[in-house]
Length: 378
Image (cartoon, rainbow, N blue to C red; front, side, top):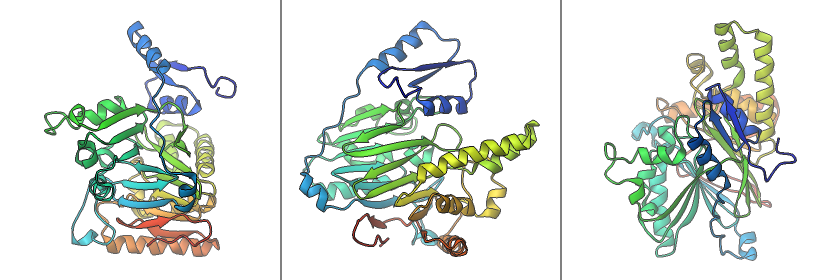
């Protein structure tokens, strides 16, 4: 529906209140999804919002020459899933929840605002001092472990800073309402609207957009609620980030058995959805992907919205990913457990005969994307 009507705003109206219907409509190119019956006030608010231009963040002032000399960099500030688990058993891989920083082509792009974003904020203040901190924060979804660090992000408390938060509508409320809700009086002493920084929250409608010169593509993940992954196309290759995603076939087959749906139909649907996921990750330089469960653990957690180890390795192999970071570590997995999972993943790659590089996502680790040098996790 987007081939000939790019300037046209599209509102899909449905009588079915299912998250998957909303996700499918937005992925197909719709700007809004409304549930019947619709009042005139709701429709008018939607139309007004869609027709109001989104202000663009000022471009970075870095010169083209400087951009060409600075390779894109990834730094991991939080790699854990579900809840933070600091302590001696997680000291090597880290206990903070999801937060990844990307410096690319003059932009600072932050992926998710788990508890790892606190240390990132302090580091940015030390690095930039009196300079204005300008960044874009991409939220994959609003589960606690992806937003719980935002109230502790120091740059948000300084009026000189420009912070742009982008994401998609939450499962039962808008992005802004959810982010503000966790900072209301029962939970936190400072409300979101009291933060002195120039903070703008924008609810995305398109599945492709730009942050400066960085092209960003989004894709809905197989995870409860509204959840996406992002792929960032930089001057030195692309970076994919999908921290929460479940393989399609086990879930669809289980649901088919429960609902009396034909198994072949469910399997074909799952195969088609997986093929779309493979294409989304095709040939990316670095993929930071959900690897929360071992294969045995996953059997007891079908429907929880997370990947098994073998499924994520197979996905990366099929997509010809260059480097895979096992991410969103389960809170019950200590450092030794992650070591064992990493070795199992590497053994799967050895058996495949392919050249995929696999690392366990480790808090504090950095990756430089360089065209003429070997990329290395250090």
